Image (cartoon, rainbow, N blue to C red; front, side, top):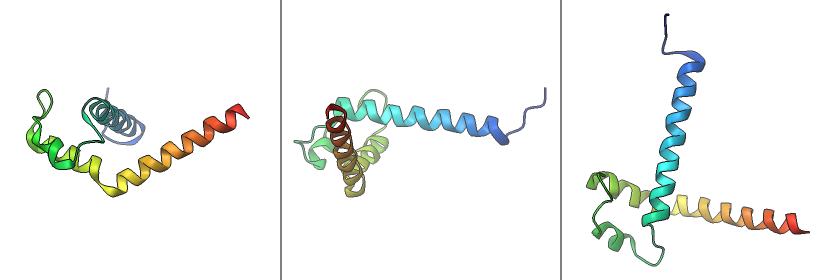
Length: 88
């Protein structure tokens, strides 16, 4: 069998990896993010598990990036409106 790194199989593998990384970030944020803490306080904590300090720093920076916070707040507003419309 001749397998090439092109086409649908490559796209499918890339999609699986992207979804896995996104789900990992979601679980890490759910477990370690605390909105009552500042970015500096969260960075002062030790990284979880086998995560490198550099990766932890990048992840916390991502969480506190204003562009990402705007996206999250607009998404939660959308979900609230969607739930409201379901009950009407």
